[in-house]
Image (cartoon, rainbow, N blue to C red):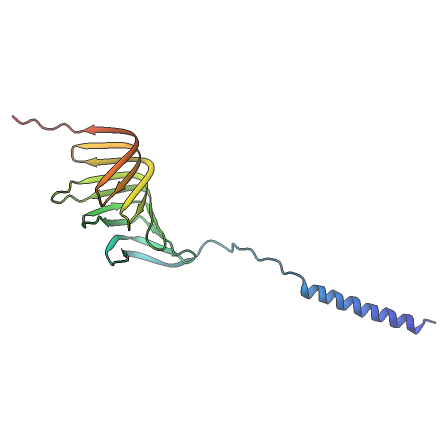
Length: 192
């Protein structure tokens, strides 16, 4: 016959093994869920919009309009398709432009224009017309400065400047090409 103590010992050891297995299962670390669960989601989108960005003093820094705006909820940045924009210098002279796309950071202090970028200063008394064309442009609307490392062209009445790299300060009305600069002057009409 089988000894009762042997059977009791086997049952107690079986219950202890089962209890330790359940305890291990309950206290094990859970597998980490993947951080990336899909493409970034937009906080909202706008179609056929116009956005006016103001500085801390309530002065207009830039206006952007376009067919589509997407705001990312993760970082608050804004992406714009084929924007039309207006920036003003400290005296209120407008620069209007277009590009294929634009990205604006959360607080509106940086605007990255990409694709064919075309900016024009509207002439007014004492201020000549000017046009900037390039493939990308980093604009600081609150400081009213702009820069690019790409090839750029500055056109003004009577001359066309081409070069690589550009810096500009809209307040002081200074545009500077950084390297490989070439200038083309339009011939003036002779007066008799």
